[in-house]
Length: 344
Image (cartoon, rainbow, N blue to C red; front, side):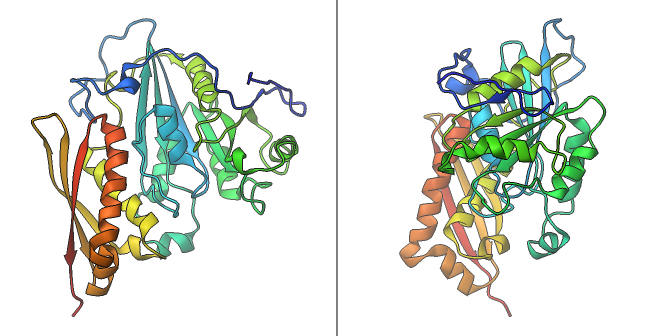
């Protein structure tokens, strides 16, 4: 399917449909982790001598909880770095995910979903939850607003918190609208009407471009990545070419395990678990070993986390191993230890 471009309203912008036939420049970070690949490097001097042709772009991904922001970032980067779950607030702090190809580096800033003060207290979110979003907007060259079009009650309105955030961007920062989960809309013709509404005066008429994608199915993601690559500007890279995120390996492991528990456990139980990495190592066959401790506040919760004969924790471990193996491009062997803490 070819990319289709249209003019929407009187504002010049292109409307890109999903496509699967774009040619991609091979990227050794996507094909497999090299021996010198690493997750984070705190000793890298960003003031290094830059090649004249180096380009980069910082992209803040903005939207409500469960809009598909982390899924999109993972697809754009070609690795499952950001933890994903069907429950809200999987992403609890800003994560930078780096994609380097040829002479261009893209930095995706996966931000927590915008929340109300009520949710902030209910889910006991970190103090930096709101400031991380502000910081991302201050650093961004472009803001990508992810709108979940599968929700018939909310898809026609960009949330006021998103609009207020867009108003705070620096001069020169442009914004793009990313309509996600289009595979779940039965009538595709409604998408054009939806674009007219979301780019109208009652929403945000200043979008430079609009993309229609399904992040989960990886439809339209190649087009979006190519657009961002073309939008990069000449300047120093922020990270080495073989760096994939600014998060530590321990944090990636812990957040992945937490996300899998969020899918496996009912209601708000996953939010009370304390998950800590006890051990990380590399085995003789170059696979990675990890041991994670999960502290449960009561025996009752501990038994629910374990499941019948340990079935639930085994299920979580297997699912987390798959995501972590994708992230680190090597086999990951994960052990999860459940610690019971009886309330007195």
